[in-house]
Length: 476
Image 1 (cartoon, helix red, strand yellow):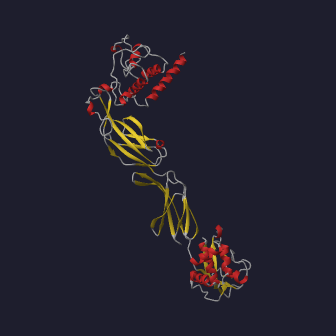
Image 2: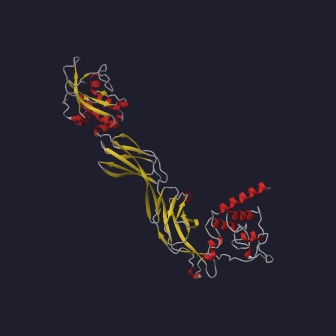
Image 3: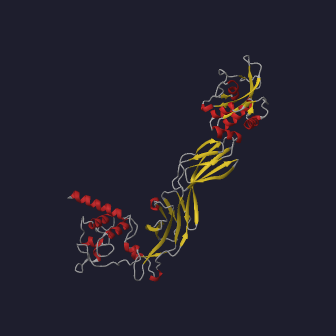
């Protein structure tokens, strides 16, 4: 039996602690009158009777164990009585009826617990100021607007200034067209609100309703409201995680992609060229294709946006971060692009076109026309020499993203003498090899030998002036 009683008391104590988390004294938290103290005694069954008499002088309200103090022991004993674990009797029973309603209930446990925790004294009603009934304000008369709270979807804190001292606060949250009280009887001037109370809503309204308690000639412990505060809660997108991916395989477009952000309605893509940033795209997807200028440094910035409708206005909120990336775009040569559109955007196809579709013609071969001059001539006339074949291939290789360079040089005899003007193309770090390969469309055109992706001194190739004995150099 002793062990069973100990467990019972522990359960009662747990109950009393839990009850302290709730509002205390239902009568005091409404605008109805609180029952005034009565002098009748309490019977063993928990109810008062006219036949039973116990003088008020024989006990102190709340001092259930009659030790001259009101503490957690009194809370535990009262809770044990309510749970029918250890019934009270006599003076203890009378002392436990702290709200003087003639019965012992959870309300008495709550009031006692509030007293012990220093939240509200047992005699708080007697200390209240008395005002005329007509001075009681039944609801918040007006609201001052606080700044909107802009936050990602996580717990957030609302704070405010106390209009005067000794106030209580009732806080309501409205979202999805439904208002709910989320805190009552609060004494502090801030409240952390859990994000899950918003559900899936992107916006909400918080109202702070200050009030004081008064007695009136007809009622006790009546709420009277003062002017309060209200503010909006707006949900902005979460941060975009990871990095910005940029794919650039065609000269005038780039494909951007990124990780989706929570609570983002859309994404804004900004591009900076020559020091000027512009909005180049808005998209609901986490990727987009944007137009770019050829042969330019481009910087990109992507930010998440949540657009919220509130009344007649639309509010755009952006994420705290942006993902960024940059690239130097490919060059663009219109005539070369036409050929690539025809044969396919492929390096070997481009080489085959240059070595087979241009008819050999004797013409200027000192490099003075420049790559674009020779290339335009070849694309327009479909005739030309080694300089024309190399130039047309070099333009297409550059547009395909290769680090291509046209060479203005010479080929020599076996003794490295008797130089003849010749042009070919070098591609550095071909296919990530770290090696420079040469491409000679004229070699294939004139001899039928393989001139695609070969190295110097390759069998069947020319004896190129690789030692720069006669001034061989890159044109671009």
